[in-house]
Length: 461
Image 1 (cartoon, rainbow, N blue to C red):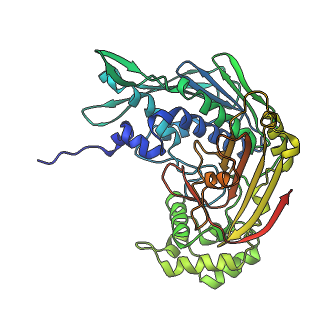
Image 2 (image 1 turned 180 degrees about the horizontal axis):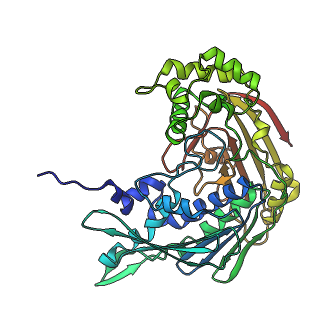
C-alpha cells in the first residue's frame, strides 16, 4: 500500500535546508546573521528609523537586536506554520534585501538538524523578544507524523523596544575517530567570516549604527556616517516598469488572494506614478476595467493573459520609469570613510559610480578601490586583500558577482586583471542597487549583472 508522508518535514533535513538557504551547514552561522540583519534593516526603514543593530555571540548562541518596531506576535504565529510562507515583500518587485519569505522558517530548524545525532532529544532553540514578550520556540520532529513539532511558550521580556532574536546553534556530530565523537564549533570556526560579513553591512548602509560583541569583547563598533541617508524603502510603491508579464500576473494573483474584493482602480492606484485620478481613469478606459473587481478582470477560473498584458502596457504608458538615482546612492564620502578606517591609504582611493536602465530596470553600480597603507611599505607584514560586495544594501556571504554581463567575466577575474588578487593589499568595495535582481540560485548566492543600458558613468580618478 502507498504511504503518505508530510512535505513539511522537508524543513527538517540537512539536505533541504541546504537547498532552501543555498549554503552548506558550515555556513549556517553566517546565514543566520545575514537573514536577521537584513530583516532588522528592513523593519527599521519601514518606520523611518535610522537602524541600530547589535550582534552578540556567546558560545553557541547568536543574538541580533534592533531598534525597529518589533515583530508582531501574529507574524510569529504565521512563521511557526510551516504550511505557509510569510513575507511582506514576497510578491512585488522592488529593490529590497530579500523576498523569499522563509528566513525564520529555515533558522528555527537549524539547531534540530545539527543535533540529529541525539535522536529523540534533538531540538532547536530560538527566542524571539518583542513588545514585552519573549517567545521561546523549541523545534523538533514528530517522527510518526513526519512533520515539525513546535513547542511555543511565552514569558515577560525586559527588551524595551525593537526585536531581539537568539538562535542556539549546537556543535554537530561530524565524524568518529577511535570510537570517540568529534564536533565542529561552527560559530568559532566562522569567526573571521562573521566579522567580515557584519562589517560589510556598515560599508553599504551609511545610516547604520552597528556593533558586534563576541564573548564579551567589543569587536565592531561603527557609528552611522549619515543617519538621515535615504534609499528606496520597502514601503514605497512598486513601478509597473519593473514587471514582465509573468511577474505582473503573479502580483495580481497575490492581491486577489489576500484582498478578494479589491477593484482594478484600487490595484493600479498603488503603483508608483499612479496616484493621479486622471491617470487612473485613462488606464481604466483603455483597458475596459472601469468599475470592475480585479478578480473579474484577471479571470475567475483562468488567467486572462490578454487583459493582464493590456493593463501592464497601459500602466507603463501612463507612468514614468524610476530614475536610477532614486534607488539610493551610497556615495564617495561614506565609502572613503570606511576605506580609511580599514587602513586604506587616502592617496590611492578611487571611486566610480555607473547608473543605467536596462529593459526598464534601473541600477546603480558603485565601486571603491585603493591600497592598504601597510602594503605601500617594504617593512612589516603585507595585509591580505579586503573585498566587500553587496546587492541592494545586503552583503554576500560569499562573492555573489560570479558573472558581470553576457561574457561571463566575474569580479574575481576583473581584480586579477589589475593584479588585485587575494594576495595583494587592496581594499575594494562593489555594490549594486537594482529594482529587480537576476539571481542564479535559490539561496541568492549568485547574480548576473547585464552590460546594456548604461546611461551615465561618474569616474573619480
